[in-house]
Length: 501
Image (cartoon, rainbow, N blue to C red; front, side, top):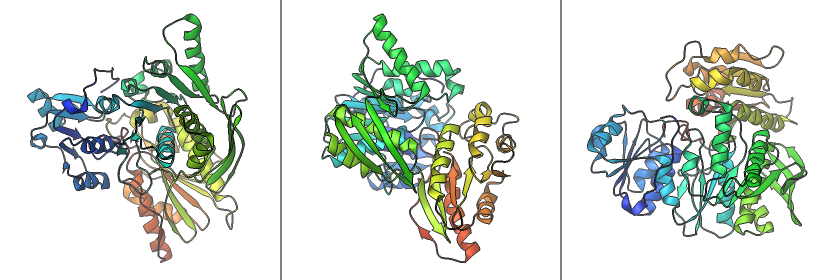
């Protein structure tokens, strides 16, 4: 679909019956859930069954597995994601009938009308930051509306229509859809070039974030003071103010930088958690997290900045952030067998893979026998692998054992010469021991054969590698002839918009 331009938003009550193609993706699922909450007739389809799909059916949506033209029924509006091609039979039928066809972002934008919108963007960390803000608002006694690209751990939906006046959304930059949202609060966690098959150049990608940050609806920009791309964004927005180039928002920065408005100090990490202090002006204090990594400390600081700007008091904001329990597929513990812990993580950009593996390194410290990090990496998209194979290899080098699977192409056609082997062969000598395993069915037994007591195994990617994690747990149990201690199941398919929905 390429880059999108904003369209005029239609109020939900004027949409009529809505059919969502790829409704099983967590992002689309959230929109569908909110339409159901509003009392709209909702139908949808997805290429495979999932807990998300079954959850919608239980609430009264007419859902289907597979795509067929007749499944549109009497829909008046059809909602699609960027992953849906024009030859999809349902989309083709909607075009033939002349139905209203909306991108998911326009449908989500319509739900934000009349509410205080918070749009959380960034190359990395937007799902977690969105979930942190939402969880803290709920815990503070408010009832926000929200759509998140990953369901809260233990739930089957990433969307909710609340009674409060705040609506929080995860704003995806991959296709430019983040420009569609009428948000008062714009959050940028970081700017790290990605999705260049859509944006073309790193500069165009950065310019897209500047456009997002200076949308006329934006009253405040919450932005990292540590990430180089975000720092450049802040400078660009401030130059606009100096040049008198249109209306610019208030800027609130967060991070470890000494001049950050919300400042992180004293961060320490142990196991799968952290402790640190957040201060803003003359207020602030300690905060602990039960999710790992320095990147989650930064996400919490961004969330704190949003919460306090919205009027949540300092102590309540810190207490509620400390209660954050995670979202599906973000360093999610799938099971433990014979001292081997298996986690699943959505990381699909080299920076995210590196962050996750550093967090895994902290998680194995102090394990009996000195635990190792075993990474199971499935590069996602041929274009991303073509653009970042060296960076993927450098990230994989942070593991002790790296099992590299073949590329998950999802919506893309193969690119000659771009395979998982490109990544596996580039892992620097003397770092991780690398196994290239292009056979999907062989990945779990290969990993089970490598893992040993005290290890942390992490499956990485936003494709179907998520289905490998429970298979590794099963393979470990068969190897050891042991019962499995299961902590939960990862999301059943890739989160939108990287996957189908």
